[in-house]
Image 1 (cartoon, rainbow, N blue to C red):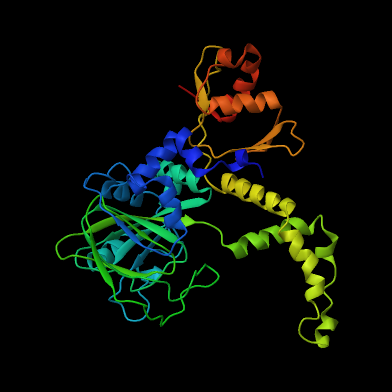
Image 2: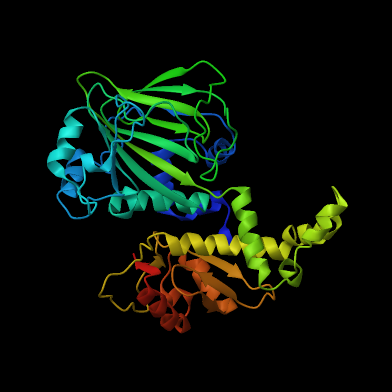
Length: 402
């Protein structure tokens, strides 16, 4: 795939205010290349915030109270955890939700008052400030990003020591929380297909960190940790989940994509040759392995990953039910919240604009207009012939005014 298809992270940062704002909020003044290197390591990191109001615009307890007053407050969006329970720390659903999954607020409040942590999963799907924040990070990392909410009463702990199966960034919104982190990965690179093993022993002594309001904490997957509130003070934090696929998931996707066009992958697997002993099938597998590592398979897989990201996440288009038609002098720019990729055709003639809707086939001239619209332009500056094209993208929600 050509570099223009996905864009390097540094390029995404230079042209996308949403990405710049999200990066600053998440990682402070950490350079992008160092942030990408952090994502590829197993090292945890504490980012002092020096501003207790740093994350106030993303979430508040009032936002949670308003959410609980709606029918959207239901399982599986809501859950609770309390490490003081025998056995699993997960509070049984019957103790805070009705049979249909809706929140049983009297019992939910009672469990919270007794020390249970309230968990709101993927709150970015229904809370606009978090949706925009996650979208900015998605534009940098080119994979899905989610935001789970943890509200813990004073002097309490939700989950016991555990590791996550994806990298997380904890944003401390309100109150303080005491974290313990055990460096290293006792079970390397766990995924959802390799969940918590139980009885995992740390590789090193715990490091203790107190998160103050405005602080952030990056914890790679597989790194053991736990957290508890201090007496007399509740804690509200956002756990940002980086949902990147594993190499195994990408290979499975590549096989699925190639199966339709590659007869070798559809051929019968000769199980009868297993009796010939170890290595009997290696020669048969070598050509197929070369296919999966070839540029065609990799390009198709990369494009499928970009399409999946755009299709699975809320589109955040730059329009509502009514839209104003732009004129020749209307300043337009690509919608900052709409995930998209401009993919040149292999022939060099034209490109495909991938987004949440059906792919758009563009001429070379139209592809050039899209590249200029990334920084903002008027149809007059692009050329009068671009007006109809700009109006089309505006109706699709891919262009914003201003």
